[in-house]
Image (tube, rainbow, N blue to C red):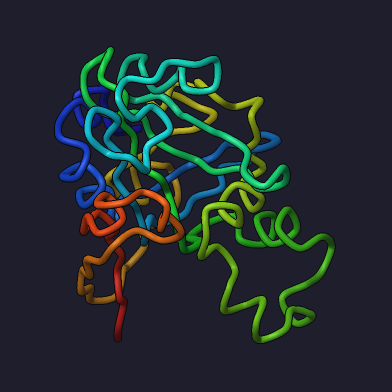
Length: 208
């Protein structure tokens, strides 16, 4: 299994956010690998980014994971109901992370669907549910059964890790569609003053 090493996460956060597009996130759940292609990310850099929880090196029990070594999961709760998955980046002591905003299922879709929507089969999902399967950080965590219990997990070993290729995760090869990378402002951070305009959101538009 060729899992991305800690070094992958130790560099510039914005570059890492872009480099994660097209990689494969693997969540081992109940002994089953749930494999998804990463399609949307956002970068957050504490030393100068007012949208980051640890802006200005603000260290609290909630942000402690951000100050740890790169290549670990930072999972937090928003609105008291949605969890968000982030990958800690940059050298230890520099609070920064990449938020995983969107995924496309590659393997284990039936299980992911059950975790996300309950016992519904694919034919029972509405067009809206199919379109909005894993296109948001809360949906990502629900579909992969990730909560604060997984905060701090090492991303270089099961049960949560990232690979370059689907084959590296031990599942049949995935053939991504041709891709166009888009760059924009991040979502839902209007409060962050000048940081609200940073072009630190990256996403794939996949076309046949």
